[in-house]
Length: 295
Ligand SMILES: C[S@@+](CC[C@H](N)C(=O)[O-])C[C@H]1O[C@@H](n2cnc3c(N)ncnc32)[C@H](O)[C@@H]1O
Image (cartoon, rainbow, N blue to C red):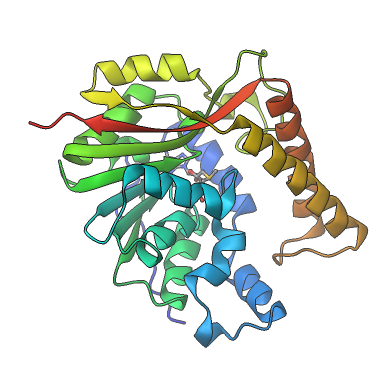
């Protein structure tokens, strides 16, 4: 495998919250070593690994692969679609949009280790001609106006305070008639969330708002909001199952993806807290597709 990840072009738009968030994801990020150990433990030779083989590890959002497919289908992603995945993590959703749906994809990711992993895993499974990544911030997207048919974002906006700037950047890079497809986490009606959250160990790292508040912003941005698909119950079940799996890992002193016992313990605390927040209606998870008005 070659090391072809490029250093950052620009880190414009990195706020103090962004620095904390990036450090958080850098600590938790899947590494290439972790992924290759996991593939080998399943008897998969690296030269034969496919994007699909990585998806149990590379979808960093509730609902995993099934949710990524649901979002792709809501947005109508196909072989003729150019997609930008904002906050692309280790590249799982971006690879899926190319591998299953045939799209041409860019991802942009703030945390350097996640960005590096995304580039290398994409090369490992031979998708580098159709899936590329930049290291940078969603608040200053390093792309020209009206470049993309679809902009996707999964579990990203809840850790960015500057939401008008975030969504107006997404709108700027969309072609007229293009779609912003969100799988996001919103504030629920059950009161403030308990910490830790999957994205935040302290309140300064979290910027939740209700879906209603979010859609008010879109009205000023030429973005027409489609129907909201509430996925909070799936999210709760996802984190309950996650808690169970992490408890089993700890009981057997093993880790399914090459990460340390300490990381597994931290992931258990997060999964339990997330499940509780969803049970108590303190968080809401959902998908929505917003259309940018044609010219
Ligand atoms: C929960 S993970 C989701 C990753 C990916 N969307 C997925 O579903 O697999 C959130 C990601 O958003 C990234 N992120 C947070 N703030 C960002 C920003 N301002 N610009 C770009 N990426 C950001 C984080 O570094 C993290 O990798």
